[in-house]
Image (cartoon, rainbow, N blue to C red):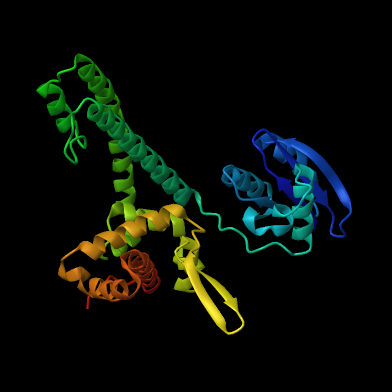
Length: 339
């Protein structure tokens, strides 16, 4: 078996290849393209080739290229490869060599899960939706701020629809330039909204095709975006041996500091999928203020925790609890039962 450490960069990456005894076979830069990677690594496939790469924004397509080529690929979290993270000689060559040696000696941390094309596509759609929502919200805040400078205060939600924008324009302004500004931003708002609706339609189609989405939506206040975000981040729940592993993956698990017989729990780790954490904390907020029968047991539990630890901590704890419930529903293939 041959071993390769590949330090990925935007234009030019660096590879380091050894045989099973650690003898260097090749080292040097390689263009970060499909053709270049295939050309440089193909000669080492005859005896088998294992490649280690760090997770990054180009990992997915490079992983697919290397797997299709016939290599055994290990993707690792760069923050967990301590020899690289703590190295004083931080160069592409050093990083590639260390990756190669750790792979050869079986010293790499647990590999990063690489989702299939469907989940990658879903992640891409959700990222695009978040960015459009963020851009539209920022646009509305800018207009609200400009109007406030001229003494015009808008009620909450006044810029949330095209109808409300049209009404704002029709009412007129004391200062002529405000009408010009609002009209200009309105055009952009309409374009962002149209693009957002296109993404929503695509997400709705994917929602219909996956039975797991319907199962997650039997939970109170869990809708399309929360359920799809869960599936996009988690992929297959069976890859987590326990619900605790999933909570840790979400970054909602508390940090732990243990010394002797004393154990202290701190703030959440914030490691893992930030979008999963953000969406399900929002679901916890909605559940906590809901007044329906479906949320009653969860609200009682939330109230007990809040009385002891405060509402902020209780909300995070409720988000963890909801993720555990979601995990169990998919593992056991059961719908949510409020009783």
